[in-house]
Length: 108
Image 1 (cartoon, rainbow, N blue to C red):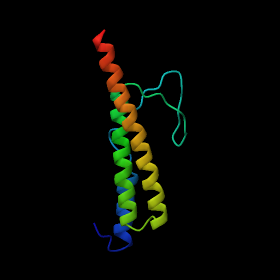
Image 2: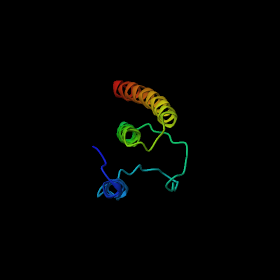
Image 3: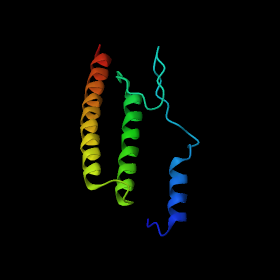
Image 4: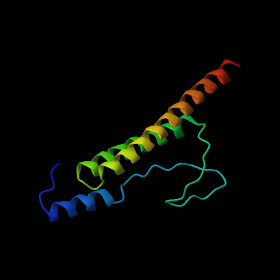
């Protein structure tokens, strides 16, 4: 996608900042988490891990778009990409452990 002028740019920003009809909700017991808060979470349910994986995939897409449109410098993109790769590794590890523990629980 090529942004030809300021109007195209503003249209793209409007589309990216609109609230979607469906939002992924992460159920958390005994806590209230507001947007932009950072809190440690225990994700031991495969459904929650899939939800986190989908959110990470969406973040990767947004990062690629931001870099393509020139909203991020090369260094910013490199840093964000490195961080998302690390988060992906952690998430993949949690998914493997969760699948193994679910399989072991089913063997009982």
